[in-house]
Structure formats: C-alpha cells, structure tokens
Image (cartoon, rainbow, N blue to C red; front, top):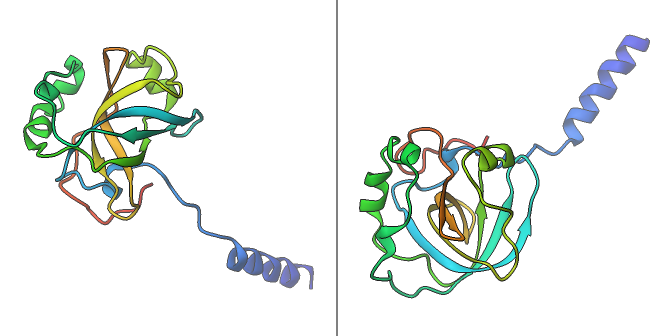
Length: 164
C-alpha cells in the first residue's frame, strides 16, 4: 500500500511540475542572422547560470567602424570573421536582453567588470528564435575590451533545439 501511494504521489508531482525553462545553448538563437547591438545598459541580472544585461539599443544604422570591434584571438579561432561578415544591420531600436556566458567564463575570458546601468555596451549577437528582443551575443565590448561569449562552433540558423 505504501509503495502504491508513493508511486501515485510521484506521478502527481510529475504531472503538476512545470517544465524547466533552459536558457542556454545556441539552438535557441538564429545564428544565420547576426546583428550589431549598441546602447546603454538599463539593467543587469548578474547570476549563474547566465547573467542577463538589458540594453536600450539606439543605433539606427551600422556605424562606420562597427567591424573594427576588438575581437579576442580565441574567438577568431572559432570562425568569428564569418559572423562579422554576415552582419547586415543593427538590432532594431528598443530594449534588448542579452543572455551572456556563465560568470566563470566571463572572468576567464577577460571581462573587465560587471556591467552597470548607464554603461555603453556593443555586441555582435543573434536574436532569439522565439522571444522578441532577446539575443545571445558571440562578442560583447565593455570599456573598450572585447569579451568572447562563444566557446563552440555555431549551428546554422534556428536548429529547433531547446535552449538547454
């Protein structure tokens, strides 16, 4: 009887549980459509597994020097030149939330500090396949320092894979 009750309770718990919403993995982002982001930081959620930085994008056109961003050599080794060459437009104006790499990677990859509201931030990244004004950058630039956000070669376009 106890075993039957335990099985029933487990089944009920699984039925009522909400699926975990994963928030990483490149399959959730349209890697075929890289965008240039430039704007002021509005808010920061600095926690693992992925910090999020919300910026107010203000670029209406690609600036003349957009492709002269400081690219770390280890990002160049992952074929980032192809990503830069594919950028055709800035992100549409408005508030965008950027899903960053985990904090320990950011520190290892040379992130100068935690972004703060009011900071100017530039990025090359990919819009979400499903969420409006959410993106995952491959490169961010803070205080003139380019920090990679990518550690693997990217799948092409929206793979349909969950974010996890």
